Length: 511
Ligand code: NAD
Image (cartoon, rainbow, N blue to C red; front, side, top):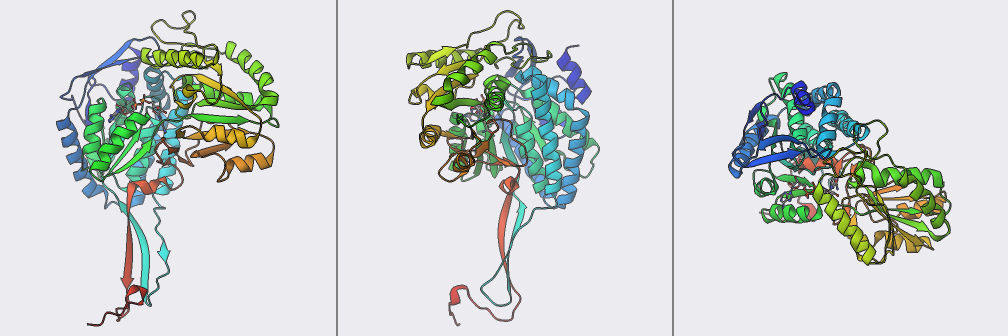
């Protein structure tokens, strides 16, 4: 038995790969087959019969039925369901991490970290289930109470990307569950086994939770067409979509056409400003983790390093030495820090970005494909450093690969201008020991991103803070803080407990 079959079977997913899963009811989809390959060595992992539009419709109908029950279950009891999911995730942490490694190519440490994020958001959501607070507001009228309540919104669609194949679903689903909403998940077609593994966890919990409606959680395997069917379904008041900017434009347009809500978490073009006062050794560690972790395939990957002229040479010198010695290879092997790219298309995109950078005056170090000391059949690359002008067109694009563009600055005002002069606005960072610089970067006239860090890199966010970004990144916020409000509808209640009928704004209207 293969590693994947054994892992799925430990999770209880023993049936042949199915593409339509509603709670404990799993069936083969009516669509074409989705062939799943491992980025580690190109091996074939599974063939899954995908969902069709009709499968989407029946799944949405089931979720809507489940909503009618789930919305009236007290929120702390909904939290109990999520608490049980967290328990099962703890038991199966390494199994899910194995699926993440084999399908997405993450090194074991990062795969375990991603599953830990799921556990963390479960804990967070359980606490949140007792804190779905509204406000009480001072009414201008005597003997009136003005208040807000939050109610469950309805069934939610979640579309996710390959590079966070389990955590993004958990960020959305665990909050949605405690908020009273069933969830329908369309994972990336590159990582459906991770979704099957997660749904197996849900199935375990459902078997132990007779009062929870079965259609609380569904998975639909498929490509963009299934994503579009979800986006256009008026039975889903909210669609949360994570992926590239073109995907966000397409989903946002479809959801907007029916006046639904979308929550978009799209591409980044994240930068770090490295100031002369920074602790260079600390900064180098922050740069390397953020730039090469997950082989440059995180939405928060560091893509642009804006380094002060005075320290640029010293920094580049050290960075090139570190890059030359990076351990690249099988993501399950001890000591490996950089695993494979997701597939051949990612490799081609990386090569064409490096060629464009060179044509635009960039000086490239690294970026070559490795053929020895790595598994055959995968796309293993040495991360690239490109010294280039901040004005070069390629610097303004997100290429989902480990390419670090390095550019120089003289004043912090100039560095912040360079920093903000891209269409995306996800994660940002400054390394400095000057408190005035740090505060400026965090201020209204500093970084224009959703995530603004000081003396840590751009990647590796905690679940407690709201996650997301501005501009083409889509404006959505998920995970911590008050992101739960996305999954609820708000009512403003005015209650008159007098025996008069005073009108707001003092209007007189005597009949
Ligand atoms: P992608 O856009 O190719 O696919 C993402 C998901 O959208 C997949 O499930 C895909 O099937 C679906 N999809 C694609 N086109 C669609 C369409 N027209 N209509 C409906 N659904 C569609 O992205 P990817 O290659 O899987 O992931 C990489 C991208 O995701 C990068 O741009 C990265 O920055 C971004 N990302 C962003 C975040 C964030 O939180 N901001 C997190 C992870 C990844």
